[in-house]
Length: 204
Image (tube, rainbow, N blue to C red):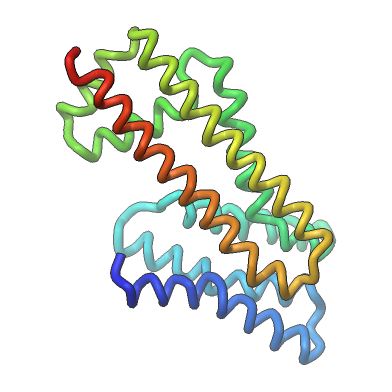
């Protein structure tokens, strides 16, 4: 990602939502609709990314699901604090689903790993399929599922607590850095862990 695109993403996902909320709320709009309007720039960015790359990444998917959840909350008379925590709730549900998938034959990370390898080519996906019955491969998928699921649930708990205890303006500015930070740490750990696995399976 170029520096210009990175700065644009920060502006649309962090600074502009904060400015929209502050201006609308300062001019008399209620907290809940002001928060919903502040979610428009990240959603627009997600749609542009979808049209440009022809696919949704994890961040865009969570943002879109968060908007749907916000609309449901608004229709049910939800408090602004719950609207503020909308994306955290989506992250928590996805993380909990990943942890529950450990009880299945193939945990959630198996499907994500295979989809990633499929983008690298049919040969890489075929090699992955051949290792399905290997205990070490299954253990690796379980470990990755625990790390991602646990990380997403922990991120959800932290941001929900802060959503109900911090001033709204502070949360709007700081919360995205928490989200991107956790996602970045999980992605970085995944890259490191995949390299370990490649070394382990190199001679097999």
